[in-house]
Length: 430
Image (cartoon, rainbow, N blue to C red; front, top):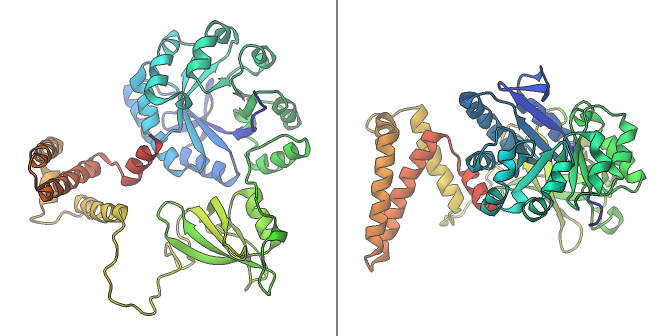
């Protein structure tokens, strides 16, 4: 197996809704774990592991809700660990939005469900954590068939792990001199480092990545297919950039890059421009917190304009608007083609508003007032109506009944606090 790309992987130890120091130290380091995620976003972390240290079902459910919030704001893949006893627990972790779940091989029950959860969710969704490499030897065939990666919880067993399996692995290290990280990364199959060595030095990640490159260590980074010299510049020596929301495809703004801005954008993964009015480099979000995280950069056919697809935090426009394009100049009457997801979002927005601001005589408020049992009863009735309508040769009936079903489904989504984005993300991941 070739040496994997190395990743800097902070982690969050989630205990009683707070982030604590480690699995063995419940000193609170951050009362709001979401603030930690934002910090990791801003400092170019590559992935994130969240350990659920909850005690009891009620606390576990509360931590799953926080994990769902973490996945919603994280700009990197999130892996969930802790409190896995059966397949249902793996499902709950993945349903929060986590890219994968970790099985703890210190527990026989986790070893026992490996094949089942891998076949159910896919090998790429399953990682395994361990402290003693002996557990790898005794389960080598199982691991190589049903697991995609490992997490070594005891860095002192690093050398012993190397000869057991060909699987890549992340090493959890809580204390190490930063220059020694280079030594760890030079090991074959070490794909990353996690633990407090990364958490406590999160502001040094970019510098450490530069150090890795100096030692010819492959790291997770944006690689440009076109150099700055290959792009065609305007008379000011700059290239215009059209910025688009990668989820909605909405055009957010237009700005300009000079060579330094181009290189900084590639280095940090955050959109950086050159301000023509201030005559200086401009990291979008540096003062407002409204960063733009790069998803893709594409040059046009003439190589003189860049289309940037980004994950936009907050508003793109300095006025507070999501997009800078809101001053309509002229308009012809035309029938606008409906974006299907936008239609769903618009209807769903009305339904959610009814829940917060009840309207007298509203059928939606009638359903909310009656509660979950009534909503489920109507949803079941509408599902049955679809089946009956499908036996009719006229397709219009099916269309009407599916519309009724989707409306009632959105009422249920609002009742259970599920969003369309979560649904579409889950579908895209399947």
